[in-house]
Length: 293
Image (cartoon, rainbow, N blue to C red; front, top):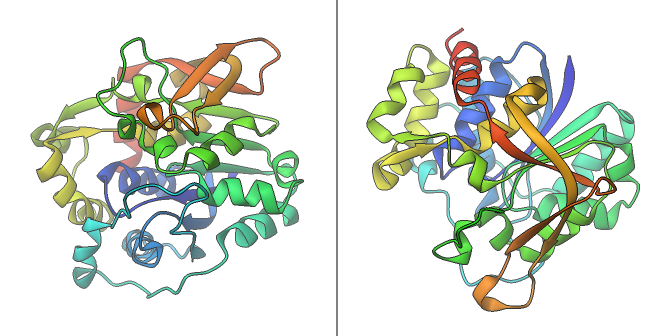
């Protein structure tokens, strides 16, 4: 059984909701807390709470930072939160997410894996305000970065880094006993058309009904489903689903045309392990089996 903390920008892209649903169903997961990040974090916390309630689970949730360490030109809003009126949920006020994370980590030294699947603001602030937090974690798994051979159409495609480049840099520079990175060029391999989502994600439970309720706006707009965030979670419990290479990561925090851009430098002395490949069939099988239980 792994003790898990989840930091998420749930409420927009459906993959955050799928990731949370997986953690709620994974038998080896003990989800001990959730923090939300990005614009209108209170609504995002309410979405997370509604999904937990739909699964019959009670999980402590804190609405975290909705401003960034490095200003960006947008304030993202959780469009999926419009479905809150259809689901039982608590309302939230903004709290101190980094303090909440630290308290859990301090009370469970070297026992907690933190999964971060939004912009890195809460996690970076945790490491800034509590410098011992990184060494007290058992592991850190992030969905962040792009290291592909072809340039991205726009810097914001690398969203979790672009949405707070300075926070991304702080997190990539941190030293955690196990620090694994799931980048965009790997998760892009887990893309299906929106109409195919129901072939392996069945609406056969209240939980999955909630996931699709909060994610339908995204699916209709995007026309596709890319399972970025669930891969970070699955990798915790099934480490062979991805292959990794050790090294270090640099983040662009000054050049506007490449803001948040990430560069991977392989080295056996590096502080991170970056996913290089994913076993697609294995991943789909694991995710589908967990969510269909």
